Image: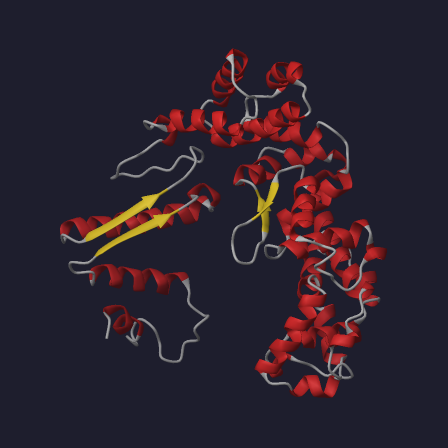
Length: 404
């Protein structure tokens, strides 16, 4: 039996009657401390990415834990190592450790140069060398800036506008946040698409899959076109193009198995939320941007939920209530295949309504909410029988909905 298994079965650390999904942070810290102490001659290296994206108080507590464990490891000759990554701000102070600043490392400048020469479609010649040199000068070592600017200049090259490349490069701001604003405001094409894209990327309850993102936006932009999904009409290539165009190039499909949609870099989120980007782009929305966005996301879920008809893919109510998990999962998969956004719409419509209610009254929404239809549809996505409800017995559910 492994040492870790013995720790997990230690009743003093993990109570026998504790649910698997009810761990708290204190327990995890205690368990981790005990695991480090039992390493013996084994070696453990922890890699922790993007500390700058976490709450500063939580970061401080985590660093204190690792510093204590590191000191214990040194004193007891235990091979325990921690590698942390973060942007320069907010500043993170570590008492003992080796700091590596990426842009100061040998080879970083060479990597940037190689990237520009490889990706810039400018051909060869002295003029190309001048453009490459200017890109690297303005980039100041920021790789994301280089990626965005090379893409912008390639559009000029592909149009044959060689004369415009140098002037366009001079127009591009050197600061990354200013570059984001420049990209998003350079033209006013499809600004409704952009607003919806930003709202979903910032405030969705979970990352949206590629097809979910597409249908979430269509639910607001063209609800009359919603129908059963046909993968032959909506190819991955077309959807990826829509993701790029609707976000003006600042969102992408991940390489994960789920193919979710996210910002191309966390600095885009920082520009929007921390650098006042939202107010610069949509000043008319004032301080209620989040509440208005949550209300819009609720409307998107409602539009999809009420516009498409999934009845042909559903068993009758009585049969569905009795389905075992395995069979219920098959029904769910069939519905999701034909209506990819329905799972999200059903599960999170009330979540977004509740979030919007902090500043925008939801009385009329709840009064007109098609509860019976929602219960029927929700039963399709509940694999456990105990979580399914009879659509005809809705009094208790009505009270739960009204309670938020």
